Image 1 (cartoon, rainbow, N blue to C red):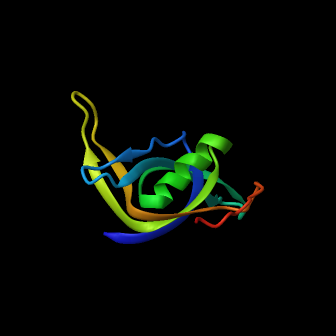
Image 2 (image 1 turned 90 degrees about the vertical axis):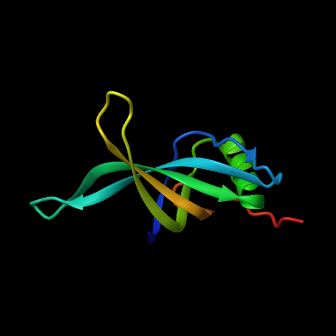
Image 3 (image 1 turned 180 degrees about the vertical axis):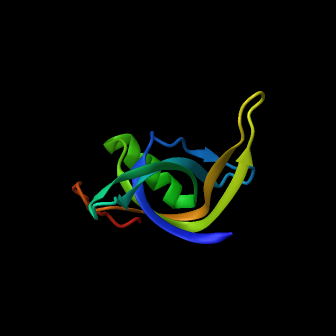
Length: 119
């Protein structure tokens, strides 16, 4: 595994769940687009990658609540990256990108952010 940090947008509002010990968690789908330098030296949008981001505890609750209020917000994700190969029945193998036990923060670029401390 390797450590990764990237910024992208939520693909949809994540769903808050609880594990067998009643600990809250969510899997947020975050989409990021690379910026690539072309042959003339200018930057353009490159490939788009989707990540399944695992968030736990109060952070998961806060992320789900924020996404419900504000939609597909821009976030910065840091954590251990895990790549798995998934082959759907009768389909082609593809790589599934996951970030485990992620630290998720809200990006300030292009959005207005209000911060409130948890009690």
